[in-house]
Length: 136
Image (tube, rainbow, N blue to C red):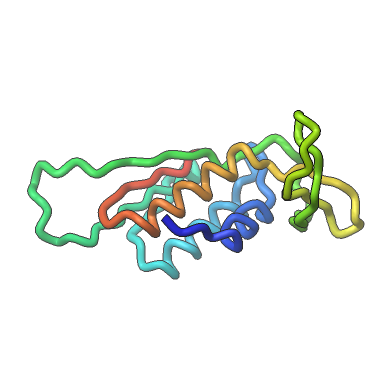
């Protein structure tokens, strides 16, 4: 599997919050469209995608399905992701991603849910037949 750090940074840079997921839904729809992956958005802003490379799958084929959340807890703000060397819990200096707004103040990066979105997008890129659901 390839690493796509640029895609990770793009996903981390999309502001979203519970009940305010419009920008993330827009990002997902644009990404899925650009990657020619069939998708739809339901009335609750959940996004469903199906990638089917093999047109001759058996009728009873079960697609693997990956799921992630699009909502996060931080307020809507600009998110500029920067690479920084920071100490981890063991005191070891490691490359990290940290988020700042346009004024240079730290802001939430929402890495927990957005890393799930990134993982689902990566699997959609890499696997030939897969479904993904992005829930609010």
